[in-house]
Amino acid sequence: MRSLVIDIDKRCNANCVHCCLGCTPDAKEYISDDEIDMIINYAEKCPELKRVSITGGEPLLRKNKVIETINRVSKLGKDTTLITNGFWAKDKKQTDEILLRLYQSGLKALTVSYDEYHAKYIPYDCIRNLFEEVKKYPISVANKFT
Image 1 (tube, rainbow, N blue to C red):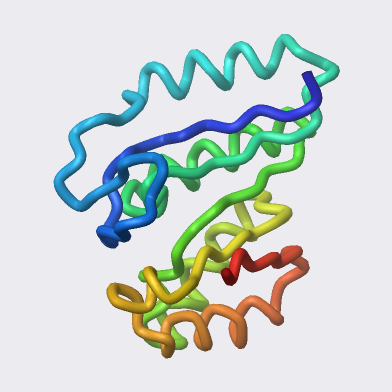
Image 2: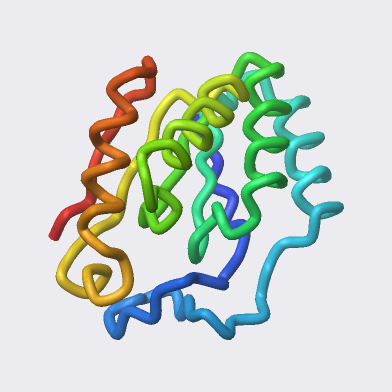
């Protein structure tokens, strides 16, 4: 196993009709902090594991736990990636503050999910802020525009 995905939460600020994971603002399913810690403890014992990806719902609804998890995984020498819809990039100052924390925690790659469904819930200005501010950091960026 070279990579591991942690689906941290089914809660999402969007309610996209096409979501195959059933993520909604009212979703109650999530992985507890203790379960996340157990997964990271397992990852520590797997030298063949090279990458841990964090997704959801919208993982940054649990920003502090996500940042803590990225930090722990990075200290194990494993790459970390995060999939987000970018709702949190409301203005450039806030966007930069969050990106700085993600970078300092060791985030290597960021995937942004945005499409006609997400556009109903995420203003395009958030996506623009995210893509403009992330240029300051050596974080690889991919987008899942469909």
